[in-house]
Length: 261
Image 1 (cartoon, rainbow, N blue to C red):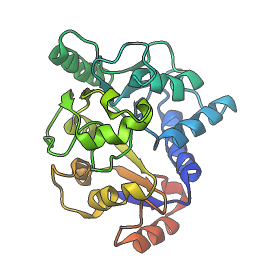
Image 2 (image 1 turned 90 degrees about the vertical axis):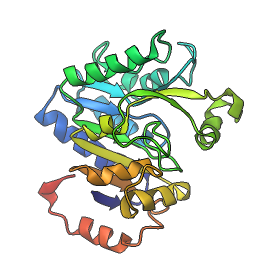
Image 3 (image 1 turned 30 degrees about the vertical axis):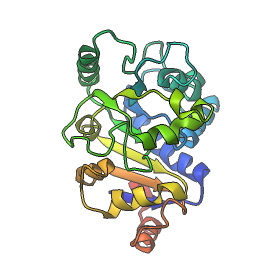
């Protein structure tokens, strides 16, 4: 796990976009894992800017989103499929149908989850997965207590997650759905490169557990300690509880320029 502490969200977006650019240069038909939430927005803004400048194309690339609320109408602005379309898909040149999401309106939820797993496998797996992290250590919607071997499935959201997401629903926690479909922890672990982004003081404890705590289902993101290629991009506030933060800074400063992330 590589931990990189950067001065602000803009710089985080640039470093992540650099890695995606290198991947697309090497493999134009790469498969990207796309996360919603506020943390990845700087990455998507940077990708859109580079696309507008003619520096990056997604024409052959494919994407899979992490999760979806269950039961939100297809035209609801907070349906994650609509959110990801607005923040990144519509701003670059993904081909029609190249980005897929779990079907939160499916009549047969278990079958829809199995079909999503099959689609990721048929695409050859995810090359680079973008992640955020919840204040309670969840990644995607794998809440505390989630099986470390889990695959795409339905989950009940914790009260804390619904409180955290209420800001997107007019601060009305009762308007936040209680269930979601989410890629499982084992699904996420199958991605070849994971880029996790965290900003702000509210994420500091989760980041501390992720990087320096024991692997535990109580902090689901800690499973990433077992992944062979994880990059954690943090601002100063999110890194404030890390005991080895000075070492992480020195390691990044000393890194050969050719190595990338």
